[in-house]
Length: 283
Image (cartoon, one colour):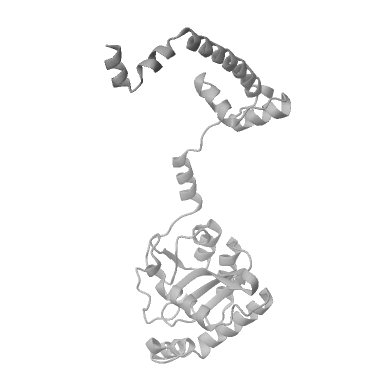
């Protein structure tokens, strides 16, 4: 019978008898006594100053206040063994989602890849890309592109990836005298932090624009903007720039070239600015 039960439990007969031997019983008693001592010490740290503590705080309190060093694994084992529940509440994923929903709102895909609508100032595309220059230095470029004409209406270059990168680009759009907002104009982006940020969304509304966003992980929903970044990195002398000021000057020169002198086959062989003026005359 013992052999059969050992086979079912997956233990050896010798292991079974060893577990119930007097020597093993004594070893377990000794271990339990040691664990009891550790438990009492842990409880001292747990209740120290009457503040709630998790396993890591207990470890640091033991070392800092009681000069007792236990590794984290041991503390967690004792807490689990004796049911010492950590009173620190765990992050509620649903609460996080609710908070994100309130503060960082994702807009629907209103554009649905209808980039060209033959009306300048109606479809605005925005995105951010990385630019690497001298010795691996990195800068961030934010742009707003007219989906119909291809014209870069506003851009901002910075060495920091902050919300100001997107905000400043919008403010430059507002200052652009050549930009005429069409009826029901929208600005389309991905679901990045900058574009779901409440400050960005408030400014979008203030400018009288609707907001549209690509589906998550779908670069094709903002393909013209991605295409522009590709041309920029192929044609501009970015890597040759030695500092941020040189990079800013190079980007400025390229934007002028792209808008006024770079002819495009799908714009009836016109430059973006020429095509914009052409559409406004036709209208």
